[in-house]
Length: 308
Image 1 (cartoon, helix red, strand yellow):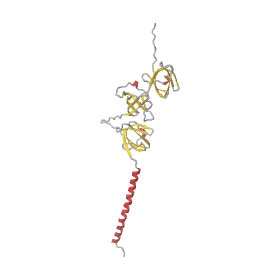
Image 2 (cartoon, one colour):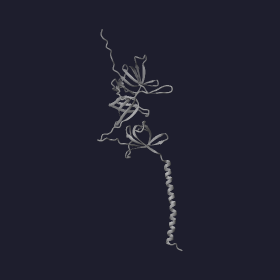
Image 3 (tube, one colour):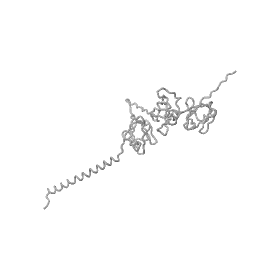
């Protein structure tokens, strides 16, 4: 008996009904598998918005309004740098003072920057650019020639700032501090902005020297001391001074960062520093070694003997 058209349709319909659940089951399994795989391998990425304090040596340090202490992230070759539209930004333009958003992931005990979004500097009404001021706390390593070099605990390399005639110097109470008292070894907080040539110090807050109690002794913050005398000898990396308070000459080492100035703070050529010159040496101790940070060349004075 030949199958009728109706029986053929019924048979095909039944086969289709049986096939659909099987197909649906396969699709559901695949979806679950992909979802499960995504959940297992996914790395949670978090964001932080703030201003770059330090950038270099595979590390980016951010000051955030939500955290009192700066936050340190590591960056790798796979870290990307973009602007707010997602367009790539050259790593050479990423520097201190820039407002950024960091997309990062927690890896072991550290924070790894995945993406750095460089944000535009805000402008006020009238088109005047708003200047962003950032701070850095550390110890003065060098001061002179319109340059202020700071060492911090968070950076292996010293940080350099320019200072200008408008830079102000105050203590922690906000009272003015003489520029002549600002010298190597002082703990400071530097307020600075960034221009095309780099960081510019707008205010230097001179902090009090603090000590940290220890079990057996007190550990003192690097302290700068001064000695007044006359140059007895100057050779390779060594400066020998005779003083009125010591029977023996005092020997100091000097380095590439040692500065030489006159009493007004103007630079003095190293070649002019020689035996017989009256000087004031500002130095720090490194173990048993005295390291000259700054040599101030003083004017020679003469004593007029009255005629009899």
